[in-house]
Image (cartoon, rainbow, N blue to C red; front, side, top):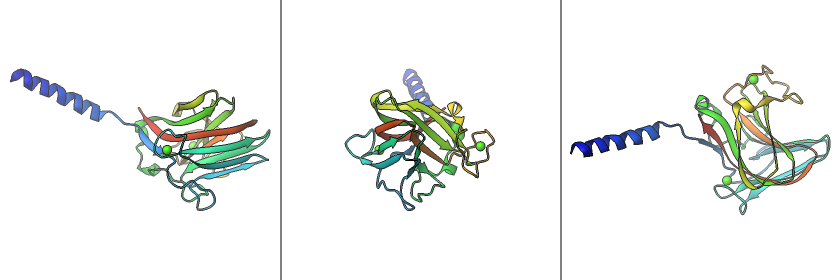
Length: 202
Ligand SMILES: [Ca+2]
Ligand SMILES: [Ca+2]
């Protein structure tokens, strides 16, 4: 009985320990209607001659029923954005959870899955902080198929090429973050897919 009691205690400890560990938090899975415009679910657009279109993709997906397909053409000197989150021009682009309901101190990184096309394109992943300051993480489309891109909060840098007019420009990443956006940087053209955006636990 004593041994059984000891084993039970051991199991209980293991269970408690695993429950005590922080879990990753799903922010966005790009499910449901994918649409643009003021009532849209994605805030996207382009300038200086670039073009971008977004749609739901049900065949090439990482999780759930669909991924976000992005067809883009970034000519030299152009820019674009594909954003989800809060306080955007598209009123239905919010994540699965509100920024103020997240315990940000429990997380060290934001990650997403991209289906690469090995195009060599430089891709920016930006987040907007609570002071409307834009932070950037850069990576390259140098792989084929799905890959998880993990962006540690400490690896983001302040964008120096552009900031919103109301940005606090304090060079501090202020939580809660409000939105994220993808931008294939010029010069590049092709198709990429994004899926499963989550916060990575400490
Ligand atoms: Ca999905
Ligand atoms: Ca800031």
